[in-house]
Image (cartoon, rainbow, N blue to C red; front, side, top):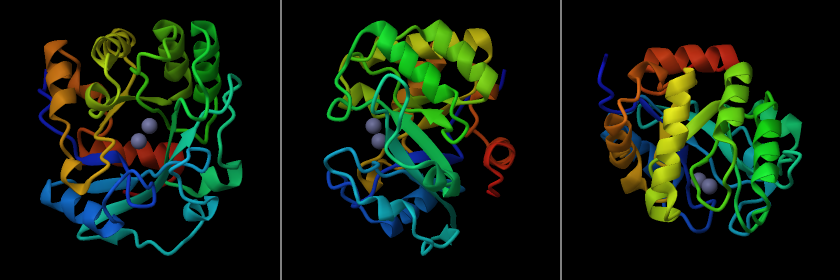
Length: 242
Ligand SMILES: [Zn+2]
Ligand SMILES: [Zn+2]
């Protein structure tokens, strides 16, 4: 089995547009280039989170396709607002973006029951405009891993292995491992991201890699492990060229 040694692209990063993050788009791209990445996605928080930019942030066409020699993808981290999987950007905006992550964040949707969290993830995984379930290892939103992972297998939605979770969401370690094991068991692709809030964090997925190595996670299931694999996935899923 090929060993997973790093990622070719970081698909979850924040910039100054989310006010609890501290770097510009140019700084994030320069950091991605320095880390040897081929691509980076800017995925600032969608409007329902208190630190988020206005919805217009996600509708502009001013960013170039490449910056600092790195492919620049424009994305969003949208908020799941209810147990029906409603998110806080309209479909027409989601359709224009290059990569969309959906996450459960307490300020937008306080935790409910395990069944409600499961229902929300099942609905999100059924939305073709959402590419990835963000930091599903968070301990305050437990869910039925088996049901959601199998749904993602049907719909082609990625599960995120988030390097920031063990730090930002204490108690995530065991859940992240359990979610990853479930994906390995069912052959469901994942994406390994930093969730960087500072340019210095871009591309550093060392915590996630250590966890995946510990459980012998198959490298072939990591969509952003190689440029070719991610390029193929983005083309098929979103018609986006890497
Ligand atoms: Zn998040
Ligand atoms: Zn994030």
